[in-house]
Length: 462
Image (cartoon, rainbow, N blue to C red; front, top):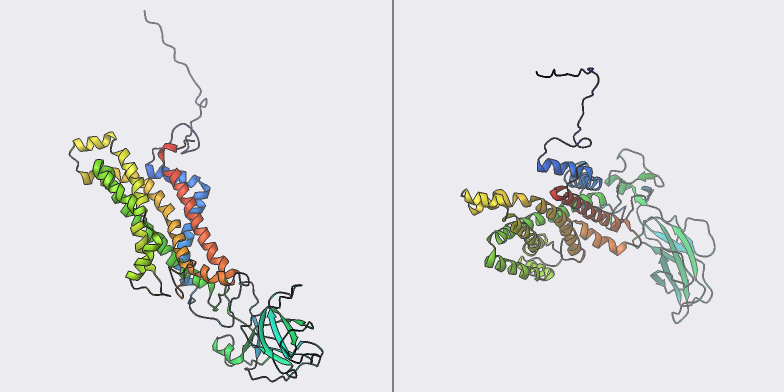
């Protein structure tokens, strides 16, 4: 006789449904493709994600920046030469320049003094005759206060007539503080100890005609000498020729990023094809191909850069963008070919490769359909690490005068120009160097994040 079965009765609210979230909870998750899973892991890497945003921002800055900041990188603003972004843009209206022979409009005084209000048009100095100055006077100018070692600075000129007690300075004046030193001379031209130093604050100056030509004032406005105008706005300042730094950085990014992205894409593609062929063929062909790659590695890059410049007829002072690009492509592919060859040697022994051979797949199909797609992770990481290397190479070559030559802007050539005045106007070096550093750092961090995201062996299941 069969035993009666017992069916337990449960309340309908005794259980709660189990909610399985996509990644954070539970032991299962929806099926994801390789690239979907890689994107999720890349998104979890904050440093790599921020670097990706920086790279996208640099591309937008390069491509669309000139559309919003429509300033030519070659136009010179001679009223604002080597101006940092924080400098005052106010200028005083002055009369057109006239020759000066010692006349003064200021109250008489004693010692070294200015004859007229000092501005960027001219600084006019007066002084009283110094007893014993039979050989005249020598005038110096410095941008730093005079120290105990009596470093007077730049010698501007001499007055050989002891009775000529005036001097006019018009040498590359900027709106800043200057320290003028008057040194009397004896009959033999030897400096006496009675030196006098005067601190002068120079202000921006512009004539009425200059303000009208630059569109700073309207033609029908009543502009008088002594009035003030506001000069043009340059967000990142100007360089030593008065050119807008922001515009030059935007156009320079096009050159730097063009070389930094096109060259790696070309030589990585060449290395992928070469390494895939060497790894698939194997044996003696593989050894022969890799020995040739070792030979290319030993070739000196700078020597070939010089040879390509001669071959293309690039003379001194001309930009060698094309020779630089060709030299990178011809000499930089062996590293990628070695990486791809190692991956192909490993993949060609997999079971699915042997199965494809049994089904009649030819060599081209095996390489293009199975092997290269399975090395895409290594290829993408190689490209992201190759881009900053190419950018730094371009910057280095332009810095030493073998790459992009002025007036064509690039970040490397701008650093070469800025290092000459780094002590007095450091912004001319800081901004291009900062863009190079940010770009190299962003691509390196992005490559590091891609390496972790595309490597399935280190996949983390949370």
